[in-house]
Structure formats: structure tokens, C-alpha cells
Image 1: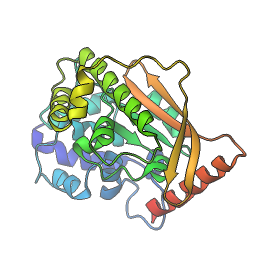
Image 2: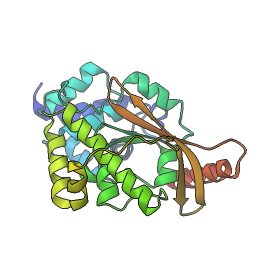
Image 3: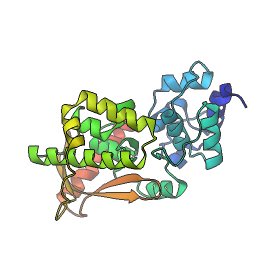
Length: 281
């Protein structure tokens, strides 16, 4: 196979993915059983126009990040994922590259949390995937591109998040994100994408440069897992926020829940209903 087979292969694999198996609502009449182009684009975090150009061969140099996003959205097994990398002109990621792969076992876990806000980050705190309830709670993520998907950038340079912090809490949060990114850089010194991220953050943010050279914060004696989310339609929601580490793949899975029967649980449910209705429409 040659590199120009990339687009037709993506189209072939898109046609075989049943929407319900990847959490895409099925409504109205569909001409095919597979994913629509805009549905795959949304799952992969790329524009439908760019996916069209890839499938038609008018765009022929997808980045490794785009290839990984498509492989994940298509639920490709290892052999097909590696083939997609080769068709795009990339070597499949090795042990010296920050992994962003969501394995089938982790995906099964996520599939069981379809009604709960869940977001997955890689070890650079770059967003790998967010489910529909997370987007309903925290704001739409599918339009984020490039460095916009990185939580360190969003907290230091970008628009921030809906999480409510005092100035002291926000400063501490920034310091812990940067300290964790520095540990990641030590584990993956050969990752060029990671080096570019650090260089860009250093050039654009004096605060990042300061924290990069600073000592890591002391561990919290009693780390609170509560977060207050300022939702534009529902107001403040106090939630439990638990981050699970997938050690073998160096992923961070953050899950937002509320105590059943509380006002916060009701507000969370309403936020998800309002947000997912908007997404479906």
C-alpha cells in the first residue's frame, strides 16, 4: 500500500463503525450503517472539512496526533492502527513517545460511564477524549485544535475552565500542572512534540518559565477532591472530582460525580440534559 491509500482506508473503516458502538446518537433516517463524516470528525477532534480533504486525498500530510485521534475514534485494533500510521508516513509510536492510546480495556470502562462526565488526558495534560456529559458540564471541546487541547496552556494562557478557584488555589493548580509536566519531560526526553510544547509555553508564558524552574509544590496533606463548577445555565455545582491513573499507558482519567439525592446531583443531571440536547440538535 502507498501513502495515498490513507483516505480510502479511513473511509472504509468509517463505514464499518456502527454509531451506537462509539456513543453517537442515532436519530432519523440514515443512508448507511457507518459513521457520517461529521460524526467521525467530531469524535476525532478535527474539522469535517479537513476530514473530507483527507478522505479525498487533497490533504496528504496528517500529523501523528491526527492519525492517533482517528485511530482512537475508529476503535482500530493495534495492527490497523499501526497501518494507519504507516499510510500517513509516520512510524507507529514507540516507548520513547508520550502515549495517547486508549486501549480496548480502558475504552470498555469509559463506555460504562456514558452518563457521567469523563475526560481523558495524556501525560502532557493534552486532552485525548471527552464524553458528551463532560462537554455538557464543562463546555464543548470538539472544536479545540493543537495547543488549545492542552490543560497547562488553557490554565496559564488560554480562556481557563468553568472550575471556580480562589487566586491562591489557581496558583497552586498551575504549579502542580507544570511540576507534573516536568516529570513527564523527564520520562520522555526524546518526544519532539513534548519538547515543542514546553518551548512554546516557555516563550509565551513568563509564569510557566518561572514554574518550570521552581521546586515542585509539597504534596497536599489532605487533598480535596471537591470542585465547584460554574455552569452558565445551572449555576454552581459542587462535585467530587477523581483522577484515575492508567499506569501502563500514562493516561489520566478524570471523573465528575455528585452525591445521589443532593441538590448538586439534580443540578448535574440538568446540566447534562441541557448540554446533550444541544449537542444532538
